[in-house]
Length: 321
Image 1 (cartoon, rainbow, N blue to C red):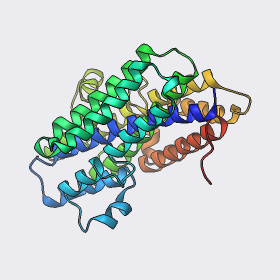
Image 2 (cartoon, rainbow, N blue to C red):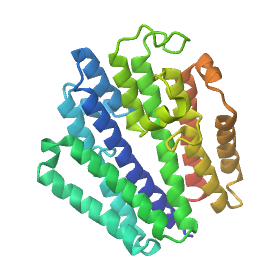
Image 3 (cartoon, rainbow, N blue to C red):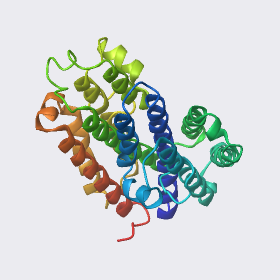
Image 4 (cartoon, rainbow, N blue to C red):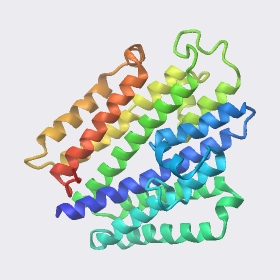
């Protein structure tokens, strides 16, 4: 496969996944902001969203203050923000158009229709009328895109690069979400044996929001069968390979697909990916929390970014220096 074709497929998948992740975070934060809470806590939630996506600096250049409306406008329909939903859906569609011949008709039509319908919905003020419905629509279209891709494409290198892009992006987002949310909510001792005893009830809704943002609330209840404990939330989203959006599950899928496209120059990238997968496979949450969750997640993000650079170097159009 030509490196340019692989590059477009890889980034098509990443942008589609990024649009879904942004919709998930905005939806949960919007619903959480409706709960009884102080103005400072609500503001902290919207500021945290900007931090997750590393958009604080670019946001401050356009807006004088952080508010629910300004953050949602910036992250949904601002064309100048490359991580906004509209920009991600446009980029996914343009990457798909560039490799139209490598996709099935169903995959192309799904990408194209998603972009056309989203721009129509923005013009019809669907975002202003009901933000939650718009976010649900974006998530549904992302699910549809993945389902059509897996269900109609030949299981060759094209599909493997799409899957690599999807799971690298998902791992990056889950780690960022965990890092920012745990720093914001863990002002007290949330990880000790008595962590849940003296916390206000509102904390339950915020920890629930973290789980809901990765479709993990029902899974948590099924796996742990007790009250929501922050350490268990961290374990579920980092180490559980049976949780679809956990770091372990993402790296398992990324490594499996990297093995299928491996070439003579990708041995070092594959080794680093395999080592990261192994660290998650044999890791323990008590050890991670003892050494510091923030430090662990920061290192994980650095390693995922390093993998992205390695994949670009070994298979795709090299990133600009």
